[in-house]
Length: 144
Image (cartoon, rainbow, N blue to C red):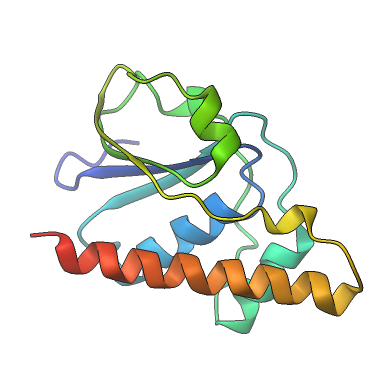
């Protein structure tokens, strides 16, 4: 699993159904040659269908993505960057983990709790998707 030539990045969320999946896909696209990228959730559930839809709008096929728990990674590989993308995971996440070098907190709204019509819910997923995309691109500019 661990690629010793690339630093590992783990995006962590509550369910690994939306935000962390999006972040994983964007970072793999932009810098998969520089980072080994993973995502997980404290309480993994099926990936939200809106996540798949809004990512497909941007050319991402998430058909091979599935929800994973942090136990698949933590303590097994050295995580250079643990990036927590939701407030609930930040509250739950211990301050230190074996094998984690840098812990970052990038809070994004949970699009799965959006209410309204199907189109209004989709719009919330699009907003969060675009925010994650912008944040990852900005972070990459900061990296050596």
